[in-house]
Every structure is written in C-alpha cells, then in structure tokens.
Image 1 (cartoon, rainbow, N blue to C red):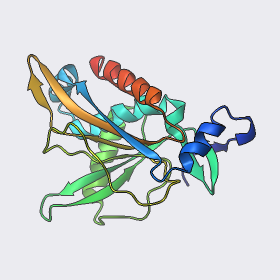
Image 2: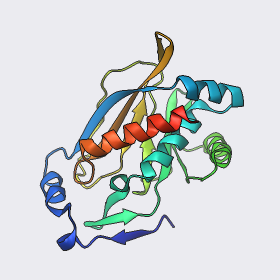
Image 3: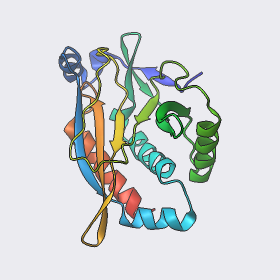
Image 4: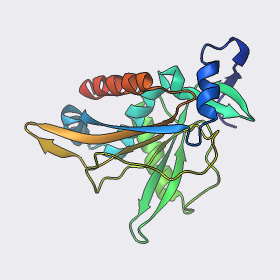
Length: 209
C-alpha cells in the first residue's frame, strides 16, 4: 500500500523555481562523499551484537526522515511529500556473489527493525522483487573499499528522486574509526545545505547511540 503523502501546491511552494530548474537538468542528481566518526557507534554495536549494516541503515533513516527535503518525491509528474520513508538495501548472496534488493519498512524501535531486516533478507529468494517504491531510501554499502568518491548508474529517469546512500570500508585514523559515506539526492528537492544537515544530525546520532 505504501506510505501516505500530500500533494504540493507548486504555485505556492517556496521551492517551485529551484525544483523546475534542476528537474530540467540532464543529470538532476548530485552526490556528496564525506567521513563519519563511528568510534562510539561501533563499540556499542559490538557490545550489543547488532548487525552493523542494519543498525546503520536504521540510524540514517531516522535522521533523514527528520529532514523534510529528503521526503519529497515525484508521483505522476507532481511533487509530493511523504510522511515517512522506508528502506531498501542490497544484500549479498555469498554463494553466487550477486546481490539482491531487499525492501524493509521502517520501524521506530531499533530491535524491531533489526529483526525484520534480518528475517526478510535471509528469506527473500529473488534478486529483485519488482521496481522500487518511491517511498524508500536506497542503501548500497561498499564495505570492500575505503572510497573518497563514488558515482552511480543513471536510469535516465529524471523524476527518479530516491536518495541513494552508500558507505565504504571503515578504517582507523589516530584513535578514531572513520567511515567513508556518501549521499546522492535529487537537486530539485535537496541542496548541499540539506546534505550538511543530514551529516551533522547523523554524526550526533551515532555519537549518542
């Protein structure tokens, strides 16, 4: 059924002009890579025996849902604002070394999400269960490489406004554990300011985990 959304009256929307300009771009999405300090987060994850991947997906989704600009999408050519965004992530089949895309609804409680994500990922047999819904954040971790930049394939659909979130292999620098992290978003809705808000909110969330 999907999450609820409201249609935006673009005539009276403060971002209408910015949205139109970037929507007409050949490549309306932009990607920013930065680093996160996960020293405390990693300690807590290991102490609780949580899945690093699923716990981080949940943490990012909590923070991104709190920023309105990350919940805008295009539906039937119109701008809408969802009340909540769920998750979709890649999950590697170790035997075939091929990934599957798994959809898991967001849960307020971390433990509930961890259980649901693990169960769904293990039980899903298909690599792809159909087109992704608009009301997801798409996660595609790259834990084998400590990247400084990352780019993505382009479907050619300029109204595809689903944010794509990645991270690489974490590493130690001095006394800290550093995680390369990237966010790709549609510029019709998201500016650098909003990427900055997410980066700051997520770092604070991980520090307090």
